[in-house]
Image (cartoon, rainbow over all chains, first blue to last red; front, side):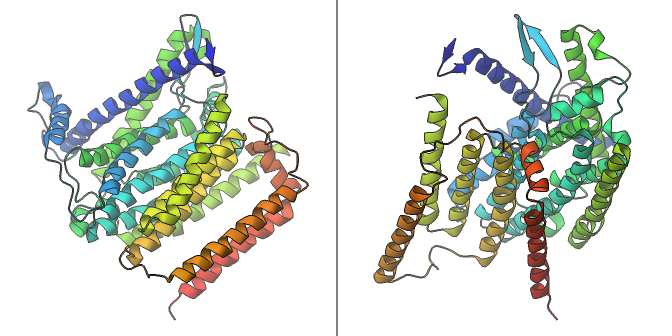
Length: 349
Length: 167
């Protein structure tokens, strides 16, 4: 069935895959908000949400319902179109990353081999960076369109923080790319999966720590949540927002966390690889399912780490944040890059 | 019309429309946002030409970093449509005439260029835009200009720091 020189069954297959991945990430994000509150409760020695449903499991649904039912307020002096565009861009940019993440190897259904990755493009990881740099606009547009001093301040903070930490992130990433020699996330994962190969974390421990810190800053998580520092800026860039538009901003942060966890798992922890298991000996469908579960486990561990750090470490001051980014992380990333390059050259002889 | 042509024309329409909106918008922030839309459309064209690396770098560097700084400056300067200086009609006319002359010169240059005459754009083929080939070309044939341009960027940065220092 080809019309306009397109394979429509492939299109359908990809559309279904996109729908599954987007809804799955939204569902996981929904329950990440719940587990965030539970983890916070455990760390602060209190029970946490436990009223809605068994063990409070229906709490995220109640929260979502509350956000949707609330009154929608757009300030009179706000720039209306951009006010709506802000949260939409934040959410879109957060979800777009999922296109290049290899969620697992391929499954065989109805005689077709279906890759569990939306697009294996040869610039995969750069695409992630492009999307991340678009995410800044969600914060900036929303903060500016609110026509509120505090929101604008927060938007500027958010943007400068994101740009500063993107640099160190890119430099940390270059070291991984030197080892793998490819920008495609699928290839990077495959190299780590090959029998006898180690995960990249073994070669790049410093690079991973740098990447992790920068990812935390890109997601605006405490200790880097300067754009929403409520004791300095009232509430930050989403102060004027209410109802589901506010919900989109809060939700985008969780989707961002999931996506950056997935990227870190793919880059440094073998993606959907199960340690000490040769997947090629299994039936392809079973291997794919085990792969998805393995990647999800890694994502959950990363999410827990994010939450643990958030409820342990207090927020930085703004000058400390900038000093850390420019004077510690970037030089460290440069040293890491040079050392990796030197070792690779030395190995090649 | 095949898919590539449809994509090409819709991207071109988007690029031209956004470029016009950059000029027409009264609010400078809106202009910047339309300019970002132009960059997106141009990146789409790069992908059609099979230059994925250029496309994504265009997005990361121009749309993602430089435009953010533009937005920064404009938001802090607090320019509104009311504060925009009104220009005389003859200044506008002069602007239109000089802009038109520039356009004519550009078009005639493109039409005369021997490299371009009688050639069609390579759609979906050609692999110089892929990161491997581009990297090899930049670091072997063009390594000296490449390094010199990086020194140029460094000097610009140093200059900005020197000017920005108070004492």
